Length: 250
Ligand code: 13P
Image (cartoon, rainbow, N blue to C red; front, side, top):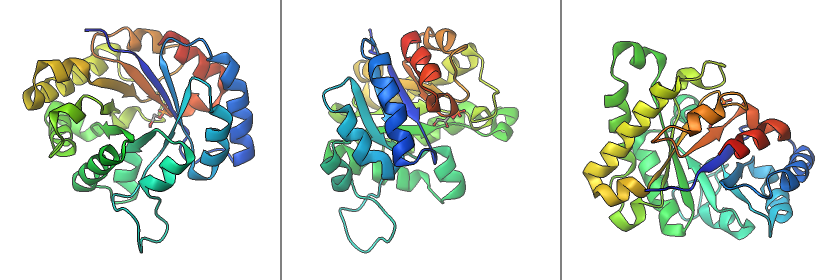
């Protein structure tokens, strides 16, 4: 089964609106002929500018988080409708930094994933083990649990549209990439869980990204693996040249 590759930049807490516009201005021509789907997940404050600039281009825009309620008294939160009104298509859910620093749990990740799908946003659901878990040999169990929890209550027809990002925490921002074999093994485990939940067709359709120190030099090998369908890129997505090279590798 051939799955279209999806290369997404996660800019995290970087770039003012002006800096964001400049980076997007450089990316638009550079990735215009990409074979892969291209997504940039920019800070909330840059969403309006970046969605306007990327209109009628092959770059789709994502947010880095979202609340799971429709609207109301949730100071500081951003709703799905607010994102949709700007033309946002994707939303990262349950990034390990949100789990680690902002109290995100498997339960909130599930609520957000369900709500994003209800609203027609494409969730990029993150999972991945810590260094301690890897050393204990519980990586696969941990990731299986995270994926099962995230997909709870999601129907089969919707499940295929979810993007899963496998991001080993020890590889994020450390320059320590998982080997292609390590990354592919866990991505295959994730596909296996989805197969158990929804069957082979859905498992074959779901796109699974790798994230964690992916860069211009290692992207090609990672993206050539059987179960890696794209990348979620942090640091290297902040430079037009590096991100473009990864997009081209895809
Ligand atoms: P780095 O590419 O900077 O390691 O970040 C990966 C990541 O967390 C993307 O969501």
